[in-house]
Image (cartoon, rainbow, N blue to C red; front, side, top):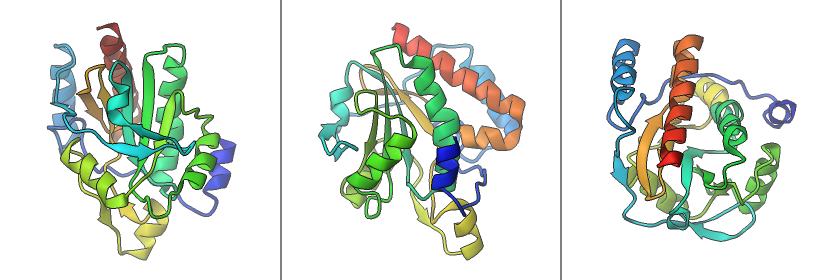
Length: 226
């Protein structure tokens, strides 16, 4: 964590809610999300959508890969950009946690795709991945044509559109781009089975955040067992 903090020296970390718990629950209050969580626990992880169209991008080792290459894997997807302080905290607190939790399972993989490809080149992603001990065999940091990547995530995965901030104070605290900080879970057939914004949960209270971490871990185990 020390290295991550050094990497973001001078940039404040602020937690804000951008999206809600799942694909179908955007911009809701805590009471509503509590109801959603309670309802979800009564059934197996649903299928929200299937990635019918493929996307090719370049990982931190300068290898061309595609999301359809992950068929047969259970994987977590997130979008980020290197200079985003909120991503720095989420990636270390949450994504690194799940990688550690499931690192012994060969069927588990993670994908983090930049939304600022004009800045986040392969060389920069390679350095960034080292902060998380991220090997391409288990965790891809992807870049490519910026418009193509953004369009795919919003159109195919139903993530919220990226918005550029204009307020200097907000930019300094949260980064240049407001974006969807959710973590999406995909099964071995490229079906999205969960979409949870742990950054939002953390902004509510610690108990709720831990509940949602536990919920996502449960869903991962369920999908791996299928």
